[in-house]
Each structure stands twice: as C-alpha cells, then as structure tokens.
Length: 255
Image (cartoon, rainbow, N blue to C red; front, side, top):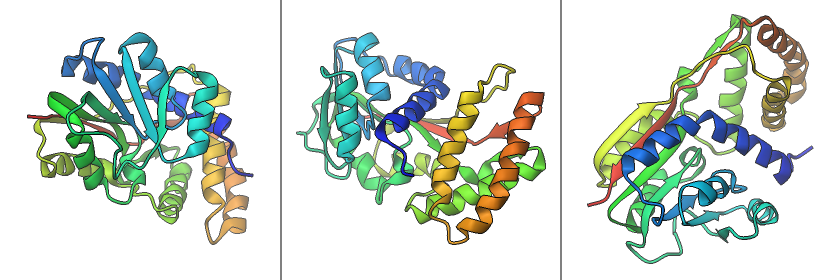
C-alpha cells in the first residue's frame, strides 16, 4: 500500500530531528537575521519550513513538485507560503532570498547541478546556499552483520526509483561547479543511545518495505525481510544495533 502524505510527514519530521543540530550550526554560521527571506527547495510536507518560520525566520517560502505534499503542509499550517514548482526551474526572480536550502533533495532530482545553479541564482549576493543533508549509502555500516543486506536492498530500490544513493560524496564538487564561494562540506555525526523508540524502528521498516515493492525479486526479498526485521528489532532491544549512513552537508556563499 502506498505511503500517505500524512505518513510521509511523520517520516520527514523524524529526518528533521536527525539533522537538527547540524541545521542549527549551518544557519548560525551563515549569519542570517530573523528578517531574512528564506527558500526551502523541495520542502515536502513542510517539516522544516514550518518549524523555522515560527522560530528562526520571518519570511519562509517553500516549493515542492509533489502537490499532495504541499496540500498536506497547508492543512498543518495554512499560513505557510508554499508553491508547487520544479527545483530545476525556480519560479522566482534573481537575487531575492538571503538563503536557499534543501534537505534530502539532491539525490532525487535528475540534474542536481542545475538545481544548485537555480538555488544560487535566486540567492542575493552575501547570501548562502545550503544542502542540509545528502546521504551516501556507499559508506553505510550495519551491525549485526546479517543486517548489511538492508543496504543492498535500499541501494537497488533507490536506483529503481531514479534516485542516486551515492549523492553525498558529490556535493562538494557540485557546489564548486556552481561557482559558490567559501564552501564548507562535512558529514553529520552519529550517536547511539538506549532510548530509540519502537515506533521509530517501525517507521524505518515501513519505508524499507515500501522501497522493496518495486524490486524485481519482491516475493523472495519479502520472505528474507521478515527475518531481517526480527534481527533488527532484537538488536535495537538489546542495545547492540549500529546503523550509520554517511550524510553530508554543504554550505556555499554567493558573491
């Protein structure tokens, strides 16, 4: 069964929690004022744009190509300024935002270089372009070892969906190619604690199961997935689970 916008919003909120400390660091380092005009490119259901419009910035605009995501975002916060638009061709004049940012977007677009150029175009001189989170599944670590197969499935599923599971390693080059200055690139850190909630584990498995729907060996994989999910949940319960997907961020200034 397809995942609903409401369920995607829960997922996007969880992702935003994973990257919150890095986001705070990047926004602070970019030196924005509360009155800065900010663009969230690929805003999804408004998980981040809704948060920062209430706490950090006076004027936040969001765009996404998925009309259902935009509709859901507006049911949560009708005051958000959201538009259905393609990140490859932003419907804005040049130099009008103090900051443009994206979050888990570049891996999904057909031409990430063009998206970054567009983000730069609509950002005013002295402003900044941010890629808050782009994963690289080529460096994923799973423990116990039996769980490494999850990464094989997800890489195959992402490729089937047209995504680039190795985008993280490319964003530094893409920012340089776009002509951005004072570029900073890094990897979001990871910590493992004992307080992960079962609903978070189940949410992750909903995404995995949804991704597996498109694989050619679906029935064979589903049988294995049942056993792998049990191992995964047991490892979390015992406090033995390690999961790390290198997730890159980038900041570049417009001159």
